[in-house]
Length: 76
Image (tube, rainbow, N blue to C red; front, side, top):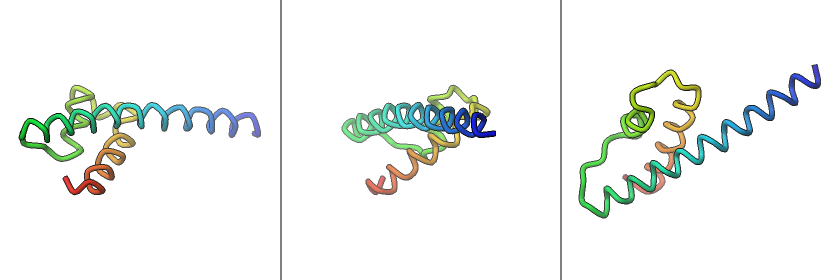
């Protein structure tokens, strides 16, 4: 069982890092949209656009959560 938990921990850590990387890309895009005075959708729709509508991707919900928190922190 110890090996399974270690593997799950490794997978979760890699998933979190990948989600953070994607969220950084999306928040960078949001900054560009702000600079260009463009209308900004909610986090769910911005992430959905990034994933090209594939909301079944395992990272999708993690990225939505990260982008949503960033938007709230920055009052967007």
